[in-house]
Length: 381
Image (cartoon, rainbow, N blue to C red):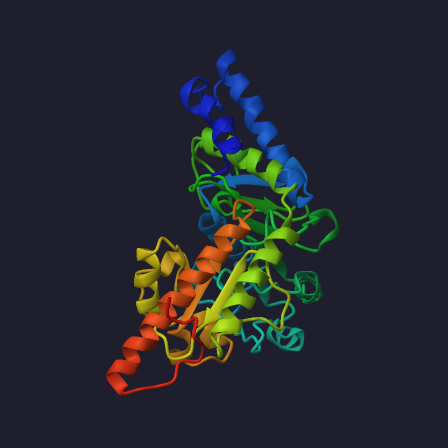
């Protein structure tokens, strides 16, 4: 968490603990704070505060968006997603099918980008209720042409939802000028705590809530509000507008260039497409990601072999497979993340640890298979 975010939320854990739905004076203080946070989140994405629904995170927001379309348009049985979506969209899509609906999964190219022509063929005017396409991929950082995708959805009369968990706070988002009906975001991707997020619901569309209860969030999400989390998300949204993404991209590029200069064959997944500044998906031919993770963890380097929420899942990345990479290639891939708190010194140190770990595994493999010539004298420290 950003220290300023922690400072903003502490009073609502310690002092201002009233229920914002109550009518007494301490509750009104909390109500005003929640409304201020709503305005901060709305400002970040260029929306109106009345269009922000606070949730427990991106997963709930994704589920709520898809469920609303299914509930509101039961006569429209068709859903369109991309093959590279997060599980928070993939699993609700599977439930959509189990409930008798139809789902079309649009493929992506080797660059990780969806084909607009394929999308036009996928949508069905009068039948498609919702098109749900991720704005920026959580594993590769590939940025989708979301405005064009939304226009295709609207041309077919469908609603448009985007999982912008990775994009919010990192890309400029102006929803007043974009044909997007529903958008999901999550606090922990912009230095707020885990367990808080939001769903943008355009005032142009009707919304059917999944969470029923006391009528909170203008009857769009029942349940007592997570006030400290909401305040934290608002502060994080305010701080995110000032983040220097160009500086983060410089560090990512420095990291990738260093590894590729010393470890020939290392490839950047999605390199041919626009990417988020803070995401790097790298494949190390012949080096098992699972073994690299162990060595890097010992050296204090935190990275993953795919989506963090699937760390315990041994299956290859569905995102990389959708991009045409085989299971062997996916099994040699690591994802690294960078933020405004990352320093150039840390980037250089991390690159050194990755190079050393790769060198150690290559040397061990050489001992097993017989003598080989290492590609660089720098591989072994």
